[in-house]
Length: 349
Image: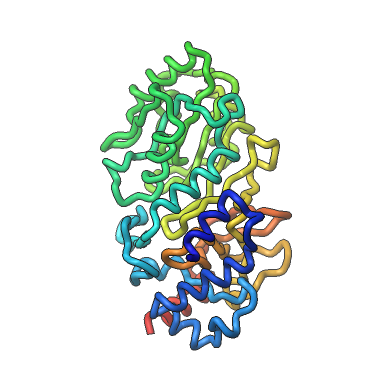
């Protein structure tokens, strides 16, 4: 079965071919998602004609806001946070165990301190728990990371009003005294909220060497957005964590896999790379053809682990390809999403 092949590929890429798996995953979804099949047929993209994964028609992320795209009955339904008045995306996920296996295969190489390979370590999560947000894919991930790698000292300090700054402060003070490296999970918004609280008190921490900060998301809901440089400078000032110990994650509700920066490996802190079961391309927003090298465009992600919905996803994020990775430029404006909108209309037809 294709699910078994993809699962094996996560940890043993030598046993199969990405190209073969991509075509098999496309054929599987073509047979099971009626709206997607109709879209593909109108474009002449069928199991007989598609010979390369790049020819698989991508599904715009916006389609998840108005349609149920599911190749099998859902066990979990993840919803995006969205902004006020914006319709939420819904990812009907039939394979949550595959999601867990994706985290197990990709999170440690990029995010776990080398001082505790494969072991447990104190983790502070500034991400809402699943109990608080049961339909959040990020909360699903954070809870799994805590259960899989968190030591008994781990804690979640995010409450109904946001970061519980006093609890987070007490946790950090205890870990600083112990001298053990820690892992902090945070959205950029929650991290900035905690740093604001520390700054108001004039309280500076020097977390132990080897500490890693996992940072994801933007500043949704925050009136003032920090630049990347400002955020890293404040992390250094108030937590004592250098920029080379901050790992950025790129993920979204509509995807199962994540991309990371190679910060802990001495790589460019702003260059995202994908795991071996994911391919990322940059497409021209108007034509949806591959953009010339060095030109910005919409990110298209082919994620084999997104087997339950759409393995080829067209995001609403702008980026530029760089070597074996990509740089994130931000969200696309309305005019830049014209190509996406036309595909969504085709799916609805």
